[in-house]
Image (cartoon, rainbow, N blue to C red; front, side):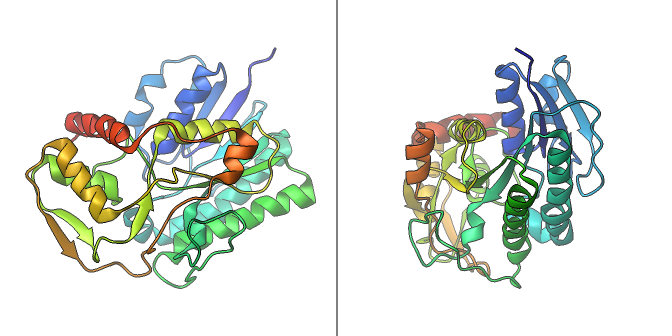
Length: 313
């Protein structure tokens, strides 16, 4: 059987780099494409000498030229944390629109299966909890978070248009909060923020009252769900995430306890359009993919804290 060739855009990022590892383990040839605006070469350094791995530094908003055949394209290129997409608003919109257009055009040309990394942010500040895939969302298109939310909503629309009009074999994964090794210390999201502050015994910053909720999926569970989705026949969006919901204040206290930190919690003003709740309804993933998360929060946090202990200076 011929080995499969996979292109992963954003492959030097947090989730993208773990997907590179997974597809290499599955015996595939992996082409990792990244312009390193938020990705890090350190995330893929261990694969650079692997004969089945190739790194291409390229911005996917420009024409993508791949000579070899492709079986799968996983489009993960995009800033993904509020700190990043507020710093790079135009780039975020361009990678969601032009980048998705280019990647879908390549999938059509190569007759490859295309998977879009979408996000729970398409649900905005939801009025329904937990959020099923059928929920259309409550998004402010002109707020500061709109550059990411609307880029991903447009990318979903583009993906479905290529599926319906050009018959491209497509998948859409709606990714909920994910954490684990290779997150950046100054990522801007809750878990890396809390851990890096806790390990330095600095005040842990919680926004608002801390009663807003999130659910956190460990990276190994996330990439397992994505792998099952791309090998399924499901073309509509699928939520992948951990439905264990908790408050951000509860998360901060858990990180302090597990890390043995002396940090205290301090409160700051809530950012504009920050969602009050975020929790996936994973009924579809359970039924259609036979997938559910396996790693409990404390176990995942222990592994992530161990990584940050070696990475944070």
